Length: 248
Ligand code: BT5
Image 1 (cartoon, rainbow, N blue to C red):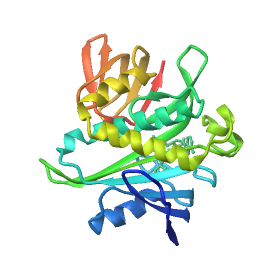
Image 2 (image 1 turned 120 degrees about the horizontal axis):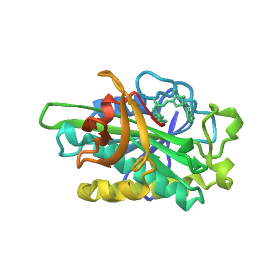
Image 3 (image 1 turned 90 degrees about the horizontal axis):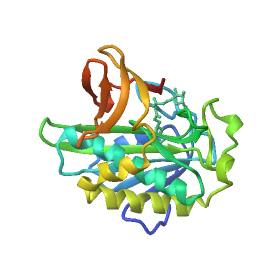
C-alpha cells in the first residue's frame, strides 16, 4: 500500500514501506501517463541494477525512481543520469559524506589515493520513445542511507557508516530539488558533473560488448559519453555500452 509522502518538492511522492522495485512501479505509472512522480521505498525486495544485476535494498535506504516526460532526444537521456548523480552526490555531501561520481552511474566514496572506492549509490535509468523524442525517462537512484555497511555487498558503504544517520525526508527533498534545477539547465549538467568526478584523470579499463578499452579518462562529451585517451588515440564510450569500469 502506497501513501503520500507529503514532501515540499517539485514532484509528488508515492511512498511504500516495501516494494519489489521502485523502477518497476515507476514504469507502471509512466504507462498510465504519469509525469513528475516519484516512487520511494524504505525497502525493495527485487531491486534491480544495470544489465540484469541485483541490487541489495534493505530497510533504511533511499530507494527511489523519478518519472519524467522531457522534451529531449533519446541521445540526451544520459544527461538525466548525470543530473541525478550530481544531485545524489550533492545531497550526500550535505550529509557529511565525501561523495564523488564514478562514471557512468555510481556515487562512491574514495578510499586512499590510488583510485579505490566504496559504492554509496547506483543509478538505473530507463526510457521509452521514438528515435527523435523520448516518451518518458525514469531515473532511479538507490542510496545506502541508514544501513549497517556489513549487511551490504563487500565493496559498498553507507551514509551511516561514513557520517552517521541522515534525516531521509530532508535528504530526498534536497536530492529532488537539485535534480529539478539540473534538468532545467541541461547545459550546466556536464560542468557540474566534472567538478565531482572521480573518474577524470584516472587510468581506467572499460569492458564493453566490442572489447575492452584501457587508457586515461580525459573528459565526458556534451551527451555524457566518456572520452578515453588510449595508445591508439581517443575513444568514446557511451554509458549504455559500459559493462564495467575500473581504475587500473
Ligand atoms: C547500479 O547497477 O548501480 C544501479 C542500481 C540502481 C538501484 C536503484 S534503487 C531504486 C531503483 N529501483 C531499482 O530497482 N533500481 C534502482 P550496476 O552498475 O549494475 O551495479 C550493480 C552491482 O552493484 C551489483 O552487481 C553489486 O555488485 C553491487 N551492489 C548491489 N547492491 C548494492 C548496494 N546496495 N550498494 C552498493 N553496491 C551494490
